Structures are given as C-alpha cells and as structure tokens.
Length: 617
Ligand code: GCU
Image (cartoon, rainbow, N blue to C red; front, side):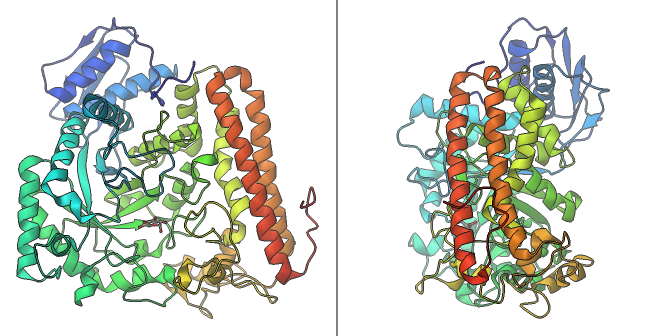
C-alpha cells in the first residue's frame, strides 16, 4: 500500500457496490450513505434514525445496521463500520457507544498570515494564500472528513495569541466559508479572540470588560457572527498571559472578562473557553506552576454557566512529563476542559516518533474524564502532503480523537487500530504498537527523566539548553530556574520547605509528593531538590540513575531503528524511508540531549558516568 496523498488512516478501497438502505435525510446522512456506498464491502447495511435513542452523538452498530438518534450519530457509526472492516475485526455485540465529552475540539494555532505557531507540518490550511478556491475548500473538506472519522466536533481556527483582525468582516467571511464546509461533518467553528480587540481595532478607547462601550461592541460582534454562522461555537481566550491583554489590565478579574464575553454569546448558545494558562501578571514572581490556582481559586463559582475553564494537562507547559495540573482539584463549581498538545512542541516536534496517547492516559489516571465538559487538543495539522510532518505524528491526531470519544481505550488498542488502517493488516502491528507505546517514555528518558523540566533551548524548544539564562527574559523562561543544579544537588523544591506547590494538590497526592521518600521517581526533581548521592528506591544514587536513564532513552531509539528495519518488507518504500530517515534524526537529537545535559550537570556533580554503555564522544 503506497503512500496515498492525503489519505492518513482513511485508506479504504472503493468498491462502489454496497447495498445501503437509508431513510431520507439531510447532508450529514447523505455523507454517511455516500461513504458506505463507496467503501462498504459487506452485505446490505441499514441506517436507522431512532428518536428513542439518546441525543448525544452516539450509535449502535451490530454488523447489519447502524442506529442513532441523529444524522451525525449515523455518520460516526458509518466510520466505525468502515474502521472495523479495514481491520478485519469483529463488530461485536452492537452495544450503544457515545462520546465521553460533548465537545471534542482541535485548537489550531494558525496565524492569519498562514504561518502556524508551533506548527511543524507546513502552513495553515485555513488561512492560505496559495491554496485558493476549490482546492482550498477541498482540503478543508478532507480535514472535516478525517475529523468526523474519529468523532471530533469542533475546530478553533486561529492562534490563541490572537490577531484582533480575525473579527473584521473580511475574516468573518472566511470563517463563514470554512464553517459551511465543516457543518455537514458535524464540526462547529470557534475563534480565538484577543481580549483587547475593540480597542485595538479602534472602536473603543478601552477594553475594560465593565465599560459600556466595550460590552456593546462585543454584543454586536457576536450578533454579526451569528447572523452569518448560526451554529458558531464560541470564543477561546488567552488573557493576561505572555503579554496578551486581559481584564487584569483594567483592575478586573478573569471572571469579569469571561462573563462579559459569555453574556454576548449566551443568547446564541455560544460558549467561552477561558484559558488558565496564565502567568507573569497578577501573581508575577510566584512559582509559575502555582499561578493558575492562585489566580482562579477564589473565582470558583463566579463564572457564567457558558464559560468553560480550559487548562493544560500539567501546570507548566506541555513538557514530556508533568504531574497533573492541580487546577483540576481546585475548581469544583466551574465547568472545566483539558487542553492537550498534539503538536509536539516539546516532544521532538515532527522529527521524533513520540506517540502521546500514554501521556494523555496518564493524565486521566489523576483527573477523571467525568469531571470534564470538554477536551481540546492543540492540532498538528498543516498543509504538508501527509498533514502532520512525521508519518507517526498522524497517530497522535488519531489517538486524540479516539480518547475524546472514549478515554478508557488503551494506548495499545488505539495504536493497533491506527497501524492496521494506516499500514494495512500485513504489518506486525504488535511490534509497532509496542514501539509506539514505549516511545513517550523513551522521550522522557533522553530529554528530561526523574521530573526534570524545561531544559529546552529558548524559542524553538527542540534541543537542550541547560545553562539557558537571559537577563532580558522573565526568569520563568530560563532553564537554570527549573533545574537549580549546584554542587549540593539538583531539582526544584516545591515541597512545604520550598514553594509549597504541593499544597495545591488533593490528598493523597499532596502528602505523597511532599515527602521525598514517597514522591514517585518520575516527579522527583519536579518537587524536590535532591543531593547527587541521594539513594533512590532501586538502590542507585540519583546521579547514576540520571545517567542510566539518558542512556536507556538512546537504547530505546536504537531498538526502534532495529524494529523499523525488520518491518521494512511490510511497508511501502516511501513511508519506510521517510520514517527511517527521521529515526536517524531522532537518534542524533537524543544523543545531543544526553551529551549536553550530562556534561553540563557533571560540572556540579563531579561524578563519573559509570552507567555509560558507550562513552560520550
Ligand atoms: C507555549 C508555547 C507558545 C504558546 C503558549 C500557549 O508557551 O511555546 O507558543 O503560545 O504555550 O499555550 O499559550
């Protein structure tokens, strides 16, 4: 099976002879019928709308029929049938399945000039100067189909660092055209908005959320948008963070800001997704990982019902491993959403094979999906032929959708599904899934084991820069601030003797993380400053274990290369070579991490690297 343009995991072979029995319906039902007529190979299949089923996008598929309350349920059921067919799997007993989260959203960090913040797969498919007219619409249609195939139902089209211009008539026009393409696939559009928009666009003198002219401007803007896009989803807002304007600029709270926008959207059924990724404003100077809770805790209960507080999985910033963000323990009255990062900003970008499902599953171990109203993933989609840069980065898009539907699916199950649809059923899916499911831990090992964090080079966040410090930057952008290595040891004391970030966690985690003896090794240097010769539970000293893990990460990448060589006859040449080249790049990068980090820390530890399998060059 050769690389097939934009096909991703949708590599069905057309047969165009299926007998599909379906009622009359709208465009969404028609899509379900069309997909099945083209690709269904089994005996007659019935599509049935049943108003007695729940209206939650769910369906029943039993091999002979697909039943759902709504047309979108039938479309999701059609993709389930085709997914099962592609894997030559058994349809099972035909139980009811429905998505866990009502809102399953991709956040695109696309700029209006077509560049993508933290994008590693080309340029924006939405704001595109070179894709025009029908080609543009076709690409967006393919994108919609891909998302529908995994049950995603929302797209935030533009960067959270939002240009005010996106709210001008010209862009509302573009957004309206995109919405028209996405609609039949059950996908709503949302926009990131700049809190200072009315002022920045010259309509008001202030952006104070309690100012009458500001309130009026947003209300009218919402009316204007809904006139064109009646099913518009709402706004995503990054306010008072990393230089973005926000209510704090006017002495107001996040609740004041969010509620003002929420009131403008409420008459139309829209929502506000207000991000808790804030630091460097009101609580400037405080341990960065504490600032979200410090800022939002007292506002719990003050938000409108159509506001959702959206938080990254960890309290810092999408590191290869972080403890869960304690904001999820502190806002019992506020609807919350988790934001994962599908684009691999801190996990090797589109150069490293790192399958992220295990990281997201880890989060759900600590934060129950039942407590969340929505799930968002920062998209890795660009206009590259293969959409995501690295062929295996596609699996992260896929896994995000599957977990948004059912977070209890295992990483391994999702990997196997993806592999057989992407590479066919002849490949050794067990071996490849094994590679995928261990790859995130490998990345942690060769980048930041034992709870180390943010040792990334400034700006691009790809390679290491452990000595990173710039007086002109805020301290919390500097790697030296996070590892605190000195001759007495390494790590950030966030226990009760340090910044006391542990106090933001619910029990038993608060006590567990606070005590050096019970703190899990994987979070050790996140919560504690530890002497170099500290004995870990496995009997090794901290220094020896650190060295061993960096070397283990590299051994893992080497084992992926060996495996990839073994499956060579089962994979088409184009994709095999592409991945093979990238594995070489990954190994080189992993070695650079090991060498840079260990050499740097060795200046403080003054200890030999005795676990080395091979010497540092
Ligand atoms: C990270 C990332 C930024 C992004 C920010 C955010 O800091 O590097 O590019 O804007 O997260 O999530 O707002």
